[in-house]
Amino acid sequence: MHGITGRMGYNQHLVRSIVAIRDQGGVLLANGDRVMPDPILVGRNADKITEIAKRHGITRTSTDLAAALANPDDTLFFDAGSTQMRAGLLTQAIEAGKHIYCEKPISEDVDTALALARLAKAKGAKNGVVQDKLYLPGLRKIKMLRDSGFFGKILSVRGEFGYWVFEGDWQAAQRPSWNYRKNDGGGIILDMLCHWRYVLDNLFGEVKAVSCLGATHIPSRVDERGQTYAADADDAAYATFELEGGVIAQINSSWTVRVRRDDLVTFQVDGTHGSAVAGLTKCWTQHRVNTPRPVWNPDQPQTMNFFNQWEEVPDNQVYDNGFKAQWEDFIRHLVTDSPWKFDLMQGVKGVQLAELGLKSWQERRWLDVPALDA
Image 1 (cartoon, rainbow, N blue to C red):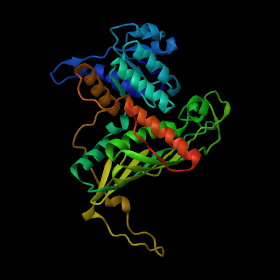
Image 2 (image 1 turned 90 degrees about the vertical axis):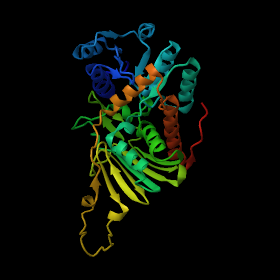
Image 3 (image 1 turned 180 degrees about the horizontal axis):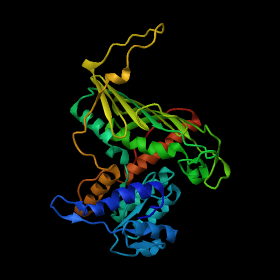
Image 4 (image 1 turned 90 degrees about the horizontal axis):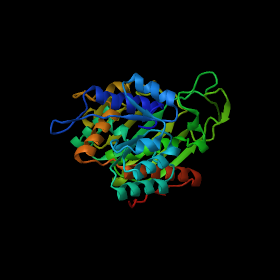
């Protein structure tokens, strides 16, 4: 496991996933057997990874990735490090005969991403890319509604993602400073359009075209050392997508927005028979027979409480941590060859959409999303 000293790698992948799986006695297989992960933590800072390992009862650490990859007993390489390092690390792991699982984006450009996917295929390496938002309770409820026919014909999808990330001067920023520097692989388009690709493709229809406008709303920030720096990467993106079947999706992504909605990310799906709004965990619906009849009248205050006109979808099952659930699915795939669709080619699609989003912004026009050949 590489990249577990970072926020996402540590919290979601190590603590909430691998450590939790070990604590529960491993991953349960269909035949009743259990698979127990035995991680080795790899990183440049020996003190950090040793302290993390001790904290969670992990016995193995290393600062020598090549030596760790040479151990035939360790069959899987996982990476949650920086985007700029990922392609090189994954290539090294594949060449060493490892299966791979990684965070996204899998690279900064489509050509590099495709080369990775083709290398994994040529080497027979099983591979997976984290698609965590599909495992969120809110979006799992949206999928249930879709599969049940609740929406009728889906017409449109509207997404709002983001929150105010402090500039770092009088309050510390909640995100690392590299997120706001182009040369360090920063920018919200590269970061978030990878997510929106797999969400849209899997829930509402394959993305066929994109129009994206990016912005750098705050051009100067203060880093972790208290030094002012030029924030030249995009901190907001306003994108429209045309999906298969004529569905229109609009998603705003911003680190410069103050939240007045149900969650840090919300999706509204409107269909001929009903609508739904989902956040990370909760989901509300409004069916056609329960849709009120508002009337536009600017001469008097609004009398309807629109929030009260929606009904919450109940939690009829226990939802485990989404990162852990996907880890378990991938481990089952490794061990039993169970079906798996979130491979590196899905990661390539995410990079492709981010690349097209940046190009659309630069050229100020709609762009088609071509099919990719593995």
